[in-house]
Image (cartoon, rainbow, N blue to C red; front, top):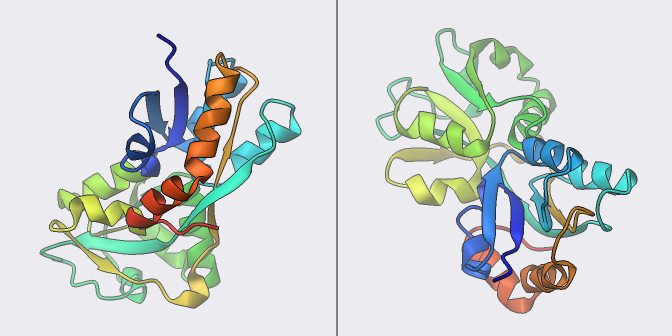
Length: 217
């Protein structure tokens, strides 16, 4: 039995199996997955939370021309009890706040740094207690109360809705979050890979992405 190997951003873990439950999925930070593909990992599909890595692979002749298939929004989350009494991104400037974010190179980490720079809040990076390798780890630390706040995607809040409070980011700071999909040259099943991309871009795929909280282009 032929099983597609899908390498996809951690934030897609809830929705991609709804689009097609058959493939073998590997969810992680987009930067980690791109590195594995460059090292020859047999991936049939690469779906990233940023255009950066698919475009790099494409430029190196390592994947097909990437297509934008979804968008997202960055939000701030705090534990339900909110012991640090954080009510806006500007409260992150206080001393002693324990902030957790994505590491540099991880899309959510890069989006977070862009957001803080746009709002003139780069000083809050001094309150960062942990740089995580994917967005799910940021969500988990905040939901467990191991941090006072963290920046994640809007779509990640749904799974832990009763454990965290979502705080909107001012529109002036919101980065442009786009997801891209491509077929790596390491693919083993090109026809099935083509069909999977069509599934994601189909009317049904778009509807499932929207139901999960993603925007669609």
